[in-house]
Image (cartoon, rainbow, N blue to C red; front, side, top):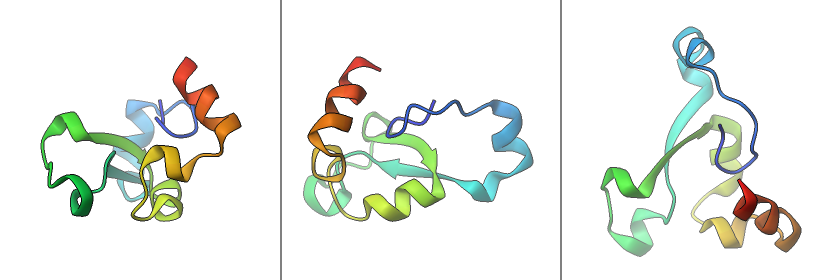
Length: 71
């Protein structure tokens, strides 16, 4: 599942179209200096591009953020 959109991501899709996905730093490395896997999540490349150097809270509207908390 895409952590930011809640959309399903299948293993088959990742294998068939690996360029459509990125491993994103949840809290940007420039802010946290954390490169551990605890700070990484699989997301679609387009979503990662939109998120830029923001935290999830900064990236998502409050409505979307409350939706994400339910995921």
